Image 1 (cartoon, rainbow, N blue to C red):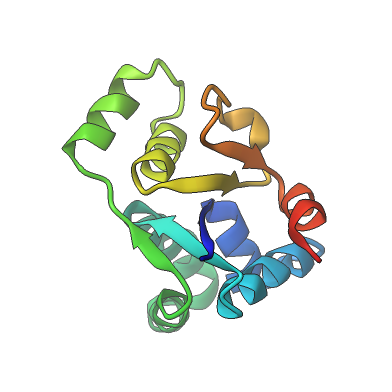
Image 2 (cartoon, one colour):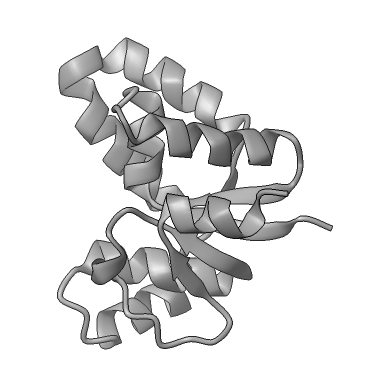
Length: 141
């Protein structure tokens, strides 16, 4: 069975906005999800953030279309009362990062993939924080 991987907003943006050179790695991660090798998860919160960032460059309509396409390839990780409570009590400086971290834990993800590893405290043995390159090096056969 494929394991669950939370994909940070920056990885999604690399793919959706074709941000070079990062799109190469994000594309490979999403291909692995499409092939069923991993189950890609993004938090429900991410859709709002992605839309907010994409809209100035693409317009509202094109941004929605891209997010609808993205939704076909990812599972939406829930953020519930306990997730928010843990994030608020975590002492992290960035609430969004804390929400993503605890979303990954609450949704049984084994990895959180981000280009901003320094933003995440790796204090859990059950969740590893990896860059896209690190993840692909470890998991490409």
